[in-house]
Image (cartoon, rainbow, N blue to C red):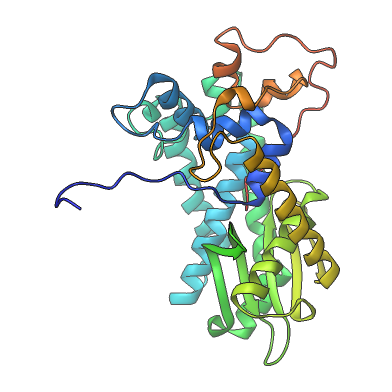
Length: 329
């Protein structure tokens, strides 16, 4: 390697739960997310790749709320581990500053200079109205999640056990199933007691969803492969911070087996659409757009697929619009 020369990033094939959701939702969206946007951060990038990369960074208001809450929870737990647990009012002040900064980043289109590190809201980019009432509801929801976090079972127990029992806090990690690299970001993990179960906590700011349990099964697979914790020693917990609801259950071997088969089968289906699976090279023609046009109206990549006019009207007028609050692995 020549000194001073940067080696280009390689777009390697990997698997994650969010990647699976994109693949199932719309193949064209999957292509833009993992292939068409690749290299779009480079100064010499082609205009299409640059635009795809900018669109990849967009989040809608519900997703922004979820991201803020996750960052807030992480901030509070890191403070608790190193110093002291901050108060709900202190965390709300911390979050309010970020809300204001990121709102102006989006409104002023600061993302045009740096798409990765400046907020770009879906509603701003596509010219959708955000009423004063909607902004107030947004702030109220974020602060309600903060209150429920401080009252949560998981926080109370984690603090009583002490930070020495905490295993993971919003850490990007990976494990392999044969040749499939699998990425996970476990929100929070701690050991309940000596010889007791490992608790894997996932904070949620949206509504209860069947997919949430599958995501936690993938976390349990990670714990089994990387931490050598058997399923019967893993307690899975979903903390719905908007409502304060807390669900908990013990992992089952059959759930991990089913999750493993899902990973094998979906990874094979993803690779089948590649031009060159060994080099992870894809072409757009092998990833057609969904025929469910209503999905296009909430998709970041509609500008690439439908131009500035947007997707055509759909028969159901978007009645099936999904309110995804966060992207998670």
